[in-house]
Length: 434
Ligand code: 5AD
Ligand code: SF4
Image 1: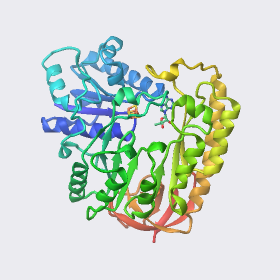
Image 2: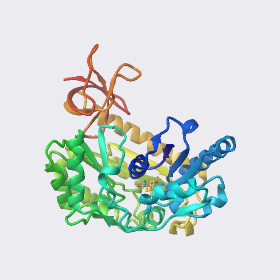
Image 3: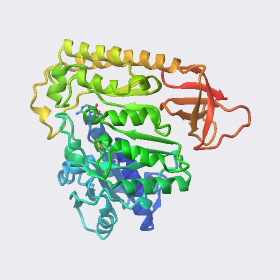
Image 4: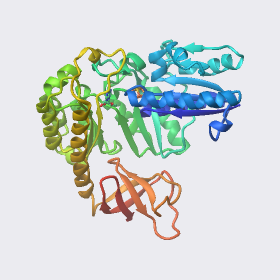
């Protein structure tokens, strides 16, 4: 039996796919090269925006054709599965099984039942020990960085967001389990980990998140720790201090702000004003200068006026984010924001998004140019030269590097090398071995 897992969405979902792959491997399944030679295809889905959902339905359409030609099991997991539950079978009868985000250890049983000929197999239950996943099971993609879950779910209630429904309330993994998993990963050869959660900085698995970072940093042989994602209201002075002083914590912070307007933030139920957000950034003090800072924006939230949007642009100027990810508001089923009147024309929303993104490209370019001439460590992330003749690497600040290795020279995959930045574009730095 061969399986294929297709993944949409965030790192949390990427890592869930690694766990699903590990569970299937344990049952003797092999990875398929493509849909064509798979006996079971699993769509690990995202429902954060409508676009992500549409992609899943169009893939389901393709799989229906495939199923007409030959025996094939189709499963849907992830956030769309958790959200739609049985409804998915009505919408797409070609689905054989559905599994929610809080039941992933049930996968082998669900596949077995579907193989035995049961139809519409489903488990979207909430298993309280879902986050206590046996660490050795995940079949990680062989990348230079290992993903490690520390917390699942979210206790905030942003009015636009599906995550509280799709991922449930917070469950924290005990810090000792996290440290033990990181130790195992380093033994396997990983030098970098990314701690994952919908809201990592509300961590309470026996210590604070800042303490967890310090404890993970004590693992010998580990070089960099990253984490994603953080809520501004859980960003403490203690965490800011750890971030700027612990040399193993990579100099990068993603702190989603969503909007520069207090009125919009209130309707989003983000729990902070812009002053409070800026105060928290201030916790970084002088350390701010050695970090790269990124954020998320939602543009065109219901009721967003031109003045609200200008406030977002003003915030962008004030903070000068090194990078940002911005999206047009997408109404999601079951969220409180659906009740807000949304009468802004679609064209106006995309114009605002384009303005914001155009300015961000300039800011990112300026941020990248500031690195030209510096020599910094970067992790080798390709196993050879890619198209264009350079190797891929990544700095601690999470910047992509196109690295000229020199004729015939091979670089060690996953290891840090010192590189001298020679040039910068908006999307990558050019560098050579220092
Ligand atoms: N519409 C648009 N963007 C959204 N995000 C979350 N929910 C929505 C939505 N309904 C964005 C937020 C979040 C990022 C992961 O996705 O900016 O930080
Ligand atoms: Fe998408 Fe959010 Fe689910 Fe991640 S947690 S897969 S971003 S809906």
